[in-house]
Length: 124
Image: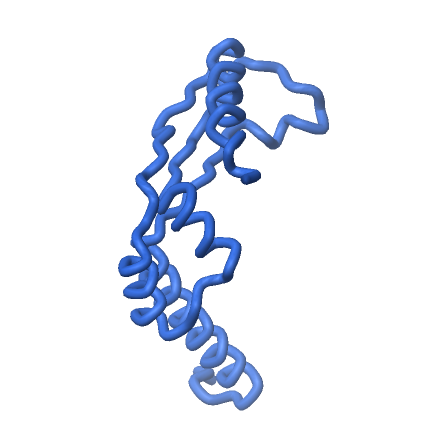
Protein backbone atom coordinates (compact mmCIF):
# COMPACT_ATOMS: atom_id res chain seq x y z
CA UNK A 1 0.00 0.00 0.00
CA UNK A 2 0.97 3.62 -0.39
CA UNK A 3 1.57 4.00 3.36
CA UNK A 4 4.29 1.33 3.32
CA UNK A 5 6.78 4.08 2.46
CA UNK A 6 5.41 6.81 4.75
CA UNK A 7 7.45 5.94 7.85
CA UNK A 8 10.68 5.76 5.85
CA UNK A 9 9.95 9.14 4.23
CA UNK A 10 9.10 10.74 7.59
CA UNK A 11 12.30 9.33 9.15
CA UNK A 12 14.37 10.71 6.24
CA UNK A 13 12.65 14.07 6.66
CA UNK A 14 13.54 14.07 10.38
CA UNK A 15 17.17 13.28 9.53
CA UNK A 16 17.34 16.11 6.97
CA UNK A 17 15.84 18.59 9.43
CA UNK A 18 18.38 17.60 12.11
CA UNK A 19 21.25 17.94 9.58
CA UNK A 20 20.10 21.53 9.04
CA UNK A 21 20.21 22.12 12.80
CA UNK A 22 16.47 21.86 13.24
CA UNK A 23 14.36 19.79 15.58
CA UNK A 24 11.93 17.01 14.89
CA UNK A 25 10.04 15.82 17.89
CA UNK A 26 6.92 13.91 18.62
CA UNK A 27 7.40 11.46 15.74
CA UNK A 28 5.12 8.60 16.70
CA UNK A 29 2.98 6.08 14.88
CA UNK A 30 0.17 4.47 16.88
CA UNK A 31 -1.02 0.90 16.51
CA UNK A 32 -3.70 0.03 13.99
CA UNK A 33 -7.27 0.53 15.13
CA UNK A 34 -9.71 -2.32 15.55
CA UNK A 35 -12.98 -2.49 13.66
CA UNK A 36 -14.79 -2.05 17.00
CA UNK A 37 -12.95 1.21 17.75
CA UNK A 38 -13.64 2.60 14.28
CA UNK A 39 -17.31 1.65 14.54
CA UNK A 40 -17.52 3.26 17.99
CA UNK A 41 -16.14 6.54 16.62
CA UNK A 42 -18.52 6.40 13.66
CA UNK A 43 -21.46 5.80 16.00
CA UNK A 44 -20.38 8.67 18.24
CA UNK A 45 -20.18 11.17 15.36
CA UNK A 46 -23.25 9.78 13.61
CA UNK A 47 -21.60 9.10 10.24
CA UNK A 48 -19.15 6.80 8.50
CA UNK A 49 -15.52 7.84 8.19
CA UNK A 50 -14.23 8.38 4.67
CA UNK A 51 -13.33 5.02 3.16
CA UNK A 52 -9.68 5.99 2.62
CA UNK A 53 -9.23 7.22 6.21
CA UNK A 54 -11.03 4.16 7.56
CA UNK A 55 -8.63 1.94 5.64
CA UNK A 56 -5.60 3.88 6.87
CA UNK A 57 -6.55 3.58 10.55
CA UNK A 58 -7.43 -0.10 10.17
CA UNK A 59 -4.46 -1.17 8.04
CA UNK A 60 -1.69 1.32 8.90
CA UNK A 61 -2.07 3.31 12.13
CA UNK A 62 -4.81 4.80 14.28
CA UNK A 63 -2.71 7.91 14.77
CA UNK A 64 0.43 9.73 13.67
CA UNK A 65 2.25 12.65 15.24
CA UNK A 66 5.10 14.35 13.41
CA UNK A 67 6.37 17.85 14.23
CA UNK A 68 9.43 19.73 13.03
CA UNK A 69 11.07 23.14 13.31
CA UNK A 70 13.97 24.69 11.42
CA UNK A 71 16.51 26.82 13.31
CA UNK A 72 15.78 30.57 13.38
CA UNK A 73 19.19 31.41 11.94
CA UNK A 74 18.75 29.22 8.85
CA UNK A 75 18.56 31.39 5.72
CA UNK A 76 16.07 29.91 3.31
CA UNK A 77 15.40 31.02 -0.26
CA UNK A 78 12.87 33.86 -0.32
CA UNK A 79 9.98 31.71 -1.55
CA UNK A 80 10.43 29.29 1.39
CA UNK A 81 10.98 31.80 4.22
CA UNK A 82 7.46 31.41 5.57
CA UNK A 83 7.97 27.67 5.99
CA UNK A 84 9.95 27.29 9.21
CA UNK A 85 7.92 24.65 11.08
CA UNK A 86 5.29 22.06 10.46
CA UNK A 87 3.05 19.47 11.99
CA UNK A 88 1.35 16.40 10.59
CA UNK A 89 -0.99 14.67 12.97
CA UNK A 90 -4.11 12.58 13.17
CA UNK A 91 -5.63 10.32 15.77
CA UNK A 92 -8.81 8.31 15.53
CA UNK A 93 -9.67 9.04 19.16
CA UNK A 94 -9.72 12.81 18.42
CA UNK A 95 -12.33 12.57 15.65
CA UNK A 96 -15.39 12.98 17.97
CA UNK A 97 -13.92 16.13 19.54
CA UNK A 98 -12.99 17.55 16.12
CA UNK A 99 -16.48 16.81 14.85
CA UNK A 100 -18.02 18.50 17.88
CA UNK A 101 -15.89 21.64 17.42
CA UNK A 102 -16.95 21.73 13.75
CA UNK A 103 -20.59 21.73 14.84
CA UNK A 104 -19.96 24.56 17.32
CA UNK A 105 -18.14 26.50 14.60
CA UNK A 106 -21.05 26.08 12.20
CA UNK A 107 -23.53 27.19 14.88
CA UNK A 108 -21.42 30.27 15.64
CA UNK A 109 -21.12 31.11 11.94
CA UNK A 110 -24.90 30.79 11.52
CA UNK A 111 -25.58 33.00 14.56
CA UNK A 112 -23.08 35.61 13.37
CA UNK A 113 -24.66 35.68 9.90
CA UNK A 114 -28.15 35.94 11.42
CA UNK A 115 -27.09 38.83 13.66
CA UNK A 116 -25.38 40.67 10.83
CA UNK A 117 -28.21 40.21 8.32
CA UNK A 118 -31.13 40.85 10.70
CA UNK A 119 -29.67 43.45 12.99
CA UNK A 120 -30.55 41.45 16.12
CA UNK A 121 -27.97 41.76 18.84
CA UNK A 122 -26.42 44.92 17.48
CA UNK A 123 -26.12 47.65 20.09
CA UNK A 124 -27.11 51.08 18.82
